[in-house]
Length: 294
Image 1 (cartoon, rainbow, N blue to C red):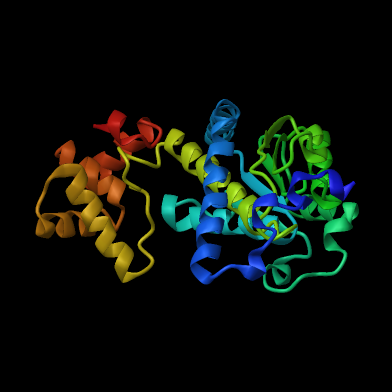
Image 2 (cartoon, one colour):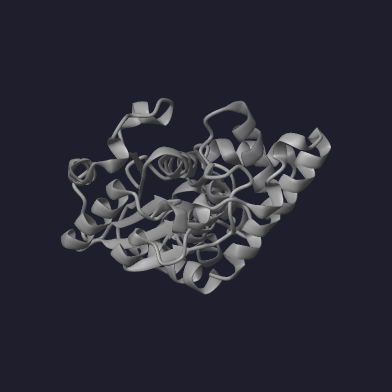
């Protein structure tokens, strides 16, 4: 029942929102938001376990697939999309699926989150494989679309993870790994785009970034596989090369050009004092890890 869910309960600290000044409102909301990170801190071992799983499955050729409805689905799509330029992965490696399809990202599709059949169809459409990982996201933890998607993934033999903002969730029971946090009732009763949405975003940030660290997409704390899709990212790539190697701006620019705009290759070329092809070979032999390649 909804009234038993933390995300649906009334917050005793915010019962008078309509009587607060703008500063008082912002102060109360900021105080409540601070509870999100503290709640996530209680499940760090479980998060670490899932990070290791994602890294392992990704290195084995598996895809990381988010599935959700409404705000939860949008957060999953957002993380999947952002991984492409950040880590140089393809849209086929990180996939965000939202109930109702792409149009549901900007406009709600009536009844989509309640359809169990739709989730199965969506996962079958991308040819779900046992090596893949399906991460079901639902603030309430009871969305039929997500539950069905996780159950189908289990039947296929894929790995499954649930991200919920209520303890003892239905999606947690349907998944092999559950990440459940309780950050308390929302500032605005039932508006799970707030603290619940923040919790989901923070958890997905950890999962995707941690998995890509384990896949050799990071050197130190530098995003060395960033895709140079605009001028800002071209300049960032040069700065990454400078930070990683200590060369001048001019040299970074020259080597980046020789490295066919691949910062990771450029860094190996400089640190190992080798040409483009040798740097590529070194990285291939090192499974993409710069530290091993040099």
